[in-house]
Image (tube, rainbow, N blue to C red; front, side, top):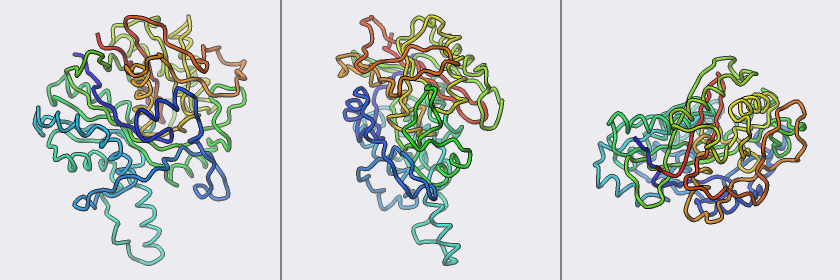
Length: 398
């Protein structure tokens, strides 16, 4: 069954809608990454923060109020017309909500716990539901008054990529006729201080696959796709394939040979009925940590021995954690969208100093274009703590 990605809403540091995000993405405009203090004590760090004013959570849903859900609402409002049409056509019990997150509303919870420690009472605005991992799906289902399956996947940095895979399965199994799928994560002190404690944070713009790479940046984003069994137009974009593995090598370090990553990429190709040479572009996980980039280089070189056009977009957005998989799948979607008449793909933003200890990869240059072929197929990699690996293939629908 073909799983069509018929609508896309997104917000991140690159912009507040898909047109602005696409323009800055393909231009390699990293100005959304800005140095900020206050996240980690005594450190100034680049972060990919959304600076626009976010929509307010409706009053009758005040218990769902969090920055995470405000980001999600901003993405959902961009495609509200398509969502309402799907509800009208299929009924509220046939629309699913499957999302990925890692933070949910933990920042509001942290502030509220700090208030309790100081004042021995929680703020009036605090509600435990804000911090539950299920909060984004519960909020979206309540806002839209949906009664279909609604849940959240939290597998760290593969969360929202797995949400797309799970959405396709829900359609395959007949549980839903349409699924709102994607991911959301907001900046918060908990995650920034956690990665700082792991000595994984860079004080500069991250520099993936460079010999000078020294860690990640963190960002925030919300991405929402409307996935259905039916196309909504002549130029249809679909989730063609997906592969997932869990090598369980280490709680935070990747398996050094890239074995699990290779398995995920090969499964994605097999499930789509494609060969490595059919992939026109690969969006790398590319966190700019020494171990991740080394592992991913080995895995990509093994699956694509003849090379594949590729880049990491994390210098443009930061690592958006639970939202990263869906965000980078969205970048593939934007590369295929009919309004991208120049067939642009995201450039590799780095210092150009390749690590001689890693296999050489084929980097996208500024202004790089996809070849004119009848059918374009793009892959996106996501890897996470605990050895969670997933690869998605987004392409022109057959």
